[in-house]
Amino acid sequence: MTFDLIIVAVVILLGVIFLLLEIFLLPGITVSGIAGFVFLLGGIAYAYMYMGPVAGNISLIIAGLLLAGSFIYFIKSKSLRRISLTTNIDSKVDTSDLNKIN
Image 1 (spheres, rainbow, N blue to C red):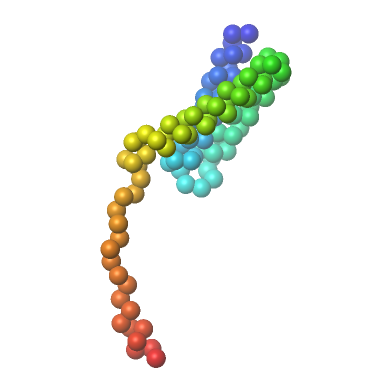
Image 2: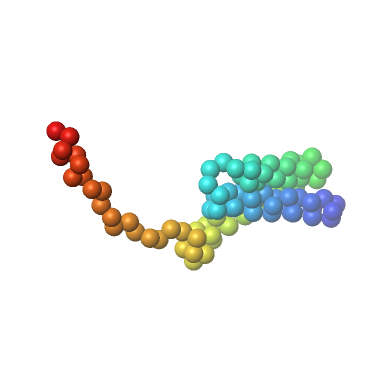
């Protein structure tokens, strides 16, 4: 029973980490996002199959709260400012050639 609990916790934690990597660091749908969903669903399915419906429901709720909490924490933390683009573009496009067309 303890080994099953460790497996579920590690797999769900890996799923949350991969999904956070996908959301904040890797653009688009990549292997990280797919792996995150597979790990999350796999951990929850493992809890339902081998530990029972009560443990499956608890792991589902904990996984949702963990994902939402880590998402909110990462948005509010200052670490997101370190990786975001903060430069402003002040240049203008030269449109003098457009007057020559007419």
